Image (cartoon, rainbow, N blue to C red; front, side, top):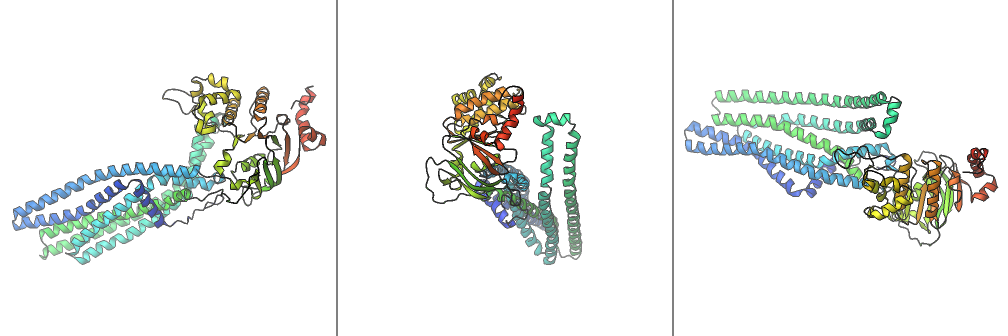
Length: 611
C-alpha cells in the first residue's frame, strides 16, 4: 500500500494474520493466555469423561456392583461440576485479555498513525477506511482470534474423545457423524470471507454516516444547518448510507440463515439415524444400557460441538481477514523517506529552492512549476499571489509534509530529505492559515506549541500577552484553566467558554510564539480573521518579533508584507517577480497592479496607500 493507492486486496495471507494475532496476544498477556489454554483443554476433555463415567455408572448399576457405581457417580458428578464452573472462569479471563489487548492494540495503531511523517495519506479516503477498520479490528481481533482458536482446539479435543469412544461401538457411525461437520465448516468459512469483504465495501458509507451524524450535533455547523434547513438533507444522507450497508449485510445474513438451516438439518438427520441404529442394536441385544448412555451422550455432544467448531473457525477467519487492515496500517512503510546522503552544512546559506515542481497526485495538475527561490538568513521574505498560486503548498514542502516531485530544497546547503523530520520541524515555528481550535484549556491551547514546556505558565502568559490575547484569557471564568469548548467541560455540570474567530486566531499566534526562538518563523495569513484595527495591532507585534529572524510571511493583504526585506510574487506555480516593495511598485508589474487594486478604495477615500 502506498500513500496514493490503498488497495482492498491486501498482500497479507490470512494465515499470517492469524499468526500475528496469536503472537500479539502471547506477547501482551502470556499468563492469561496459558490459563485459557489449560482451561479449554480441561473443558474439551470433560464431555468424554462425562460420557465414559455415565456408561460405567449404568453398567455397574445393571450388574449390581453398587460400590463401583458410587465411584463412577462421583467421577460423573465431578465432571459435571467442572463443566458448570469452567465457563465463568473462561469468561473472566477472556474479558481481562480483551481489555489488555485492546489497550495495547490502540496504542500501536495510534502510534503508527501519528508517526506518519507526511500528510498525503490523510488526503486519501481509502486510508481513512482502512484506519477505521483497523480501529475496529485491532482492539478485539487478537482476543477473538485467540479465543476462537482455543475454542477450535477444545472442540477438536472433544470430538476426538467422543469419536474415539463412539468408534469402539460403531466405527461407521463415528465416521458418518464426522462427515456431517465438513460441509457445515466449509460453508461457514465461505460466509466469513464474504462478511469481511463486505466490511471493506461498506466502510465508506458507514464513515459518511458517522461524519454526517456528527455534523448534526456539531456546534460550528449548527448555525448553517438551522439557517439553511439542512437537517432533513443530512438525515437523508445518513439513512441512505445505512440502507446501503444494510442491504449488503442482509444478503450475507440470508446466506448464514441457509447454512444454519442446513447444519441443523444435517445434525438432526444424523442424530435420528444414530437413534434408530441404537434402538435396533438394543433390540438385537448387542448393546448394554451403558452403551446406550454413551451413544446418546456422544451423538448429542458431537452434533453440538460440530456447530461450535464451524462457528469458531468462521469467526477466527473473518476477524483475521479484517485484522489485515490493522497490520497494513501498523506495518506501513515510511511515507516520506530520509535520504542518507552525505552533505556538508554551509552555515548562513539560508533556505534555497532549486527548480521545484510539485503536484499532489501523479495525474493531478502541477501546483508548483520550476520554482527557484532563496530565503536568506535573518531576513523577512514574503510570498504573495492569488488563491491557488502555490503559497501554502510551498509552506508544506518547507515543513516536509510532502517532498518535491522534482527539484530540491536545501537548508544551509543540506537537502531537507537528509534531515530527520523531527529535527527539521524542531527548527521551525508556524502559524498556519487553517489553525486548530482545540477543545482544551486556554493555557493548553498555547502550551502545545512546545509540548515539552506545556507546564511553563510564565512562558504561556508571556506568549499570550505578546499576541494581544492575554487580557481576554485572564477575563475567562477560570483564566488560563478555562476549557475552550461547549462540548467538553472541566467537570460534570460546568460549562466551557468559547472565543470569537479573531480571538482564536490570536490564540493560534500565541501558540506559535510560545514555540520560542526557532530558526524559521512561518506566518501563513496570521491575521485573516481580524478586523482592521486588530490586524494592524497584530502585525506591529509580529514586526518586532520577526526583527533579525528568518521569517516567511504569506498574506493576501499586501499592506501586511510591504515592510518585508524581500517580496516574491507567485502566479500559476511560478515566481512571477520578486524584489522589495518600492522596486516592485516601480516595475509596474503584477505586484503593483495588485497593490493599486487594494489601495484603490482607500485612495478614493483620501487615505492614500493604506494597504
